[in-house]
Length: 157
Image (tube, rainbow, N blue to C red; front, side):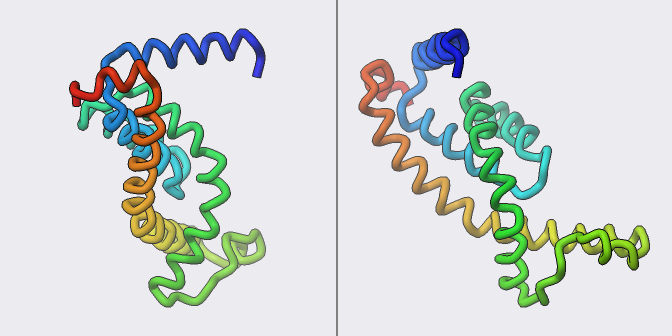
């Protein structure tokens, strides 16, 4: 991280802290952003995080920062979510979209295969996301309460 970027990040963080966000509310924002950022559908988390931020009146920059921080996890967890979803539905494990497998399918067959894989992955994500948000919220709240600028806003929640 360059020194200039680090200064910008610190300045933005201080600005967020001065917005009167309580540790609990910021923890919920970060936990939701990270969990939604792990949704196994590329492109969807950014839109969902923005909708959550506006709908629940959460801090948009904070939720998107958590979303972007989760991107490596999103990519790494796609296949495990697909496999977990297959186990949940007791579906037979299929080769995940190899060129050879796709060459023998029609366009509708490819769409069905991708849709099934996506559905399995989303169900697995849904089952794990709620407990993950609860755990992350508790952990982040405990950590954020140690920041004096945030601890002072605790009653604003």
